Image 1 (cartoon, rainbow, N blue to C red):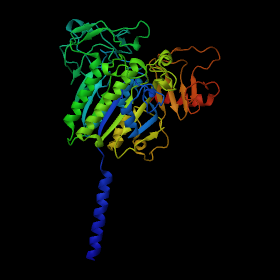
Image 2 (image 1 turned 90 degrees about the vertical axis):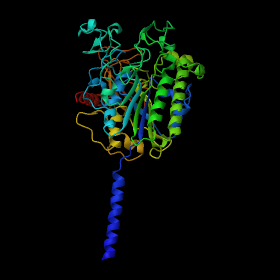
Image 3 (image 1 turned 120 degrees about the horizontal axis):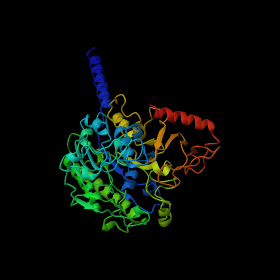
Length: 507
């Protein structure tokens, strides 16, 4: 009888150990690298004919999983960043279209769960280093506190401040409602894009230097401004160097990694780079390195800087315990004449560019590397959007998301790990352009609610003639370049997708 009891005790012990092992939660470091305006066709792992070479990003793809049907939730900067951090579409917020400027009012709702606050609550050390572009609340000088009008102007639109007159700002005062109020333990940010004032850094919501100088801007080309090192006029700190912003962010990121390596607490580093968005400012050692002009040189500089970051992970021994995600906030600013001049397709063969509702505006590179968990060299054609980060992190840590949290987020963890998904189909994706065009993607079908690009490409908006289709419908499996509008010939599909789009918008 004693021998049977001993066997039973051992079996129960083995079962308990196995059960405990299954219940253990993997807690890797997470680094989310967000390039700015880098196109699907700029990454040589995606485009064999690319005139830009990206060996370090290609290495991530070779050692991880590369997605071929990933989309930014918007075709421009601010809304995508909102979507990444909150798991919901930005058009549900106070900013239904467009972007904030450098003095824009804080966009993240004060009680809104973010990826950072979720991970912070799971004992992660959280940091953001890079381009913020989600607004902070600058303090106004006393004499200008009553200067803000709620009438619709260039500065005040949709009932919120998209920008301010920099003369009104009291830079001696600490702005409020920055990253530290939304789940980040540490922050080192540029307020908005590198071509928008104020040109300064905020560390832990405090200016590292007051922007007491003024730059007249840099508009070197009277034609297509963004082909040069363009930035707008405005306030700038005395030490600010446009050419050093990208290297500076990488230095700050390396410092953060070095300071947190080997700690028991894992870290989350959100690294939204300000490149290769304009101004295209490659340093001297990268000038002429590509076959796509200053833009291509800047892309290759971004790749090299990412390589420096990967080296730091290896040197600190953190590489094997770190999930790295690389992606871009939207498609490239790459006009047809740029394609012709350099024979480089920054958006690959997809139609349109940044800001547009067509695929070139929002189909982006997306790569996940996690040693021993993600199969090296794997490729997924699963259609998804960057709002997936919140649900994916919750799935990874086995955390249940609260009600009215990340309602547009679907975990892609089963796809990344090569497991069978716990869902039959991907959720339908909603695309959104800079001018507020909507599109819905379901399976191979894509419905666009208006005619035109809705962004930067001409024509932006086409008014339909009598008896002409008022929207666009494409079968991306047969027509990935969106050349054949099937709206008139597929009325049932138009009806189905229109109803589903309206239902999602009404949630």
